[in-house]
Length: 399
Ligand SMILES: *Cc1c(COP(=O)(O)O)cnc(C)c1O
Ligand SMILES: [Zn+2]
Image (cartoon, rainbow, N blue to C red; front, side):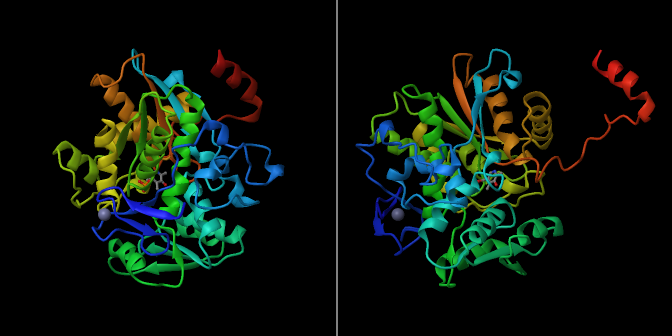
C-alpha cells in the first residue's frame, strides 16, 4: 500500500522517500488492486455513522489512509446525474459529476482529506484558489497547522475566503511558478499537499471509482474533465488502471481533457503529437482555476489521454462563458468557468464526430460557481418592480 511508482520509467520508492521520480516525473501510490471487487467498497462513511451517506472512504481498501471521522470523512460521495437539457442534438448522453457539493466546494477536498489523514504535522499547499481553501479548512477541522503560499496578485476577496480558516497565510513576491519546486525539493517542516502530490492524487482517483461504480457492470464510454496541473487527470487515469487490473471495466473509458484556449500547454502538446508538455506564455482567462502555464503533471496527463485513446480540447473564452451560463440556466448547476470547459469540450467533440448518441459521457464539474461564479455578472434580465405591481408582474413573467 505504501509503494510509490513512476508511471513512466517504472521506478518504485517507499512513501516518504520521494515525491517525484529521479527521471523527473511525478510519483503515485501503487496499491495492488488485482483482487479488488465492488463488494469491497464497504459502504463506509469514514467510520462516522452520523454522516449517513457513502463518501470516498467507501474505497478505503485502495487508499493510503485509514477512514477518519468528522470533516475529512465527508469528502466525496458526490451526485452523478444525466442532464438531457444540455445534451447536443444527436450527441452523447451527458452525466454530470457535481464536485461542487464537496465540503469546501471543489474536488480538491478528496485529495486534501486523504492527505490530512495520512501526513503528520503541519500541512501546506502552493495555491490561491480551491486547493488553498480546502487545505486551510481541513487543517482547521483536524486541529492542525496549515501553511498556504499564495501569489502576490491574489485578490483580497480570495484571501479573505482562505483566511477565515486561520492558516499561516503568505503572500509571495517573486516567481510563483518556481515555488512548487521549492516545496518539493526543500524540507519546509510541513507536508505540502500540492496539486499532484501522491497523497492528493490517491484521494482524487476516488471520483473515477464513484463514476465507474455507478455504471457497473458497464462503464461510461468517456470521462471528460478540465485540466490544469494534471493532478486530477492523473487520479482518474490511476483509477481506471486499477479498476482495469481488477477486471471491473468491460472497456476502459477514454479520458478527454479540456483547457481554456488562453492557457493550454497540454492541448498544444497534444495537437503537435508530442509526449512532453512545454511551458507557454498564458494570457489571463476567466478560467482562473485552470490557468497553469507549466503543469507539473502535464506529461502524465498526456500519457493518460494517449493510453486511453482520448484527446485534449482547447475551448475559446466565449464558448466557455456561454457554457457556464448554459449549465446554470438549463441544468441548474452553477460552476466556475474553469469547469464549463469540460461540457463545452463535449459539444465540440460531438460536432467533430468523436461521440454519438449511443455514448455515455461522464463530465467532472470540478468546482462550485457559488465561489468563483460568472466574472461578469449578468443582471440585464433583472426587472425593477414596485411591491404593489408584483402580482401582475409575476403573472406576466410566467404566462
Ligand atoms: C484545481 C482545479 C482544476 C484543475 O485540477 P488539476 O488537478 O490541477 O489539473 C480544475 N477545476 C477546478 C475547479 C479546480 O479547482
Ligand atoms: Zn521515473
